[in-house]
Length: 202
Image 1 (cartoon, one colour):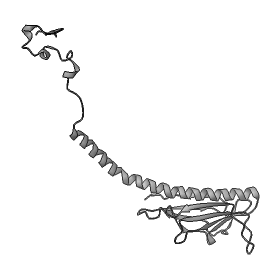
Image 2 (image 1 turned 90 degrees about the horizontal axis):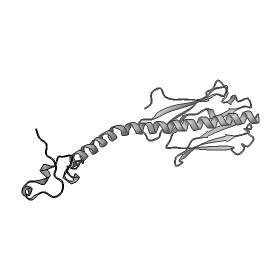
Image 3 (image 1 turned 135 degrees about the horizontal axis):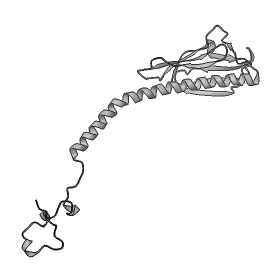
Image 4 (image 1 turned 60 degrees about the vertical axis):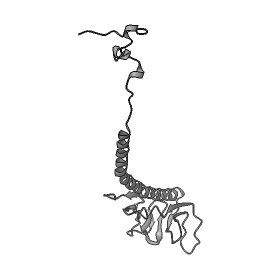
């Protein structure tokens, strides 16, 4: 075994016929003589194809999650509106109602009005204290309390619809989706408001 020393400076005349680069160890030759690392076109195409496959597999899942979030968000807004009406009734010690008006053909939103105080008929109904608009593309109302109305008294209890009638609100959505989910916003006689989600989501 022997080692070859890389000559320093210009090669001597007698070495002119030799390949100067062959005398240099690989670690000592200039970087210009080293192969350059990189990706081939085939490798790039394979990576792009894998990304496309993974995206195609994940897209339906993310679409389902988006649809679930839409109907869950609508249910949360309805629950918040009912709880706010109950709190208003307790603070003011007077009846406060939520009126649900579903959208008709040509309308783009359902309407929830908060009325306080809520006088008995035939006294004119006062102007709403608050309004909540829910897009029709987000949900549809399947079941509403009698008259589309829930009323809390000054103690926060439900007085309309009068127990044992149900004060449940059943919604479904989003509209236009092939896989829809149903959520119940349940208001007990004591005034407790809770959201009942599906056991199995679509």
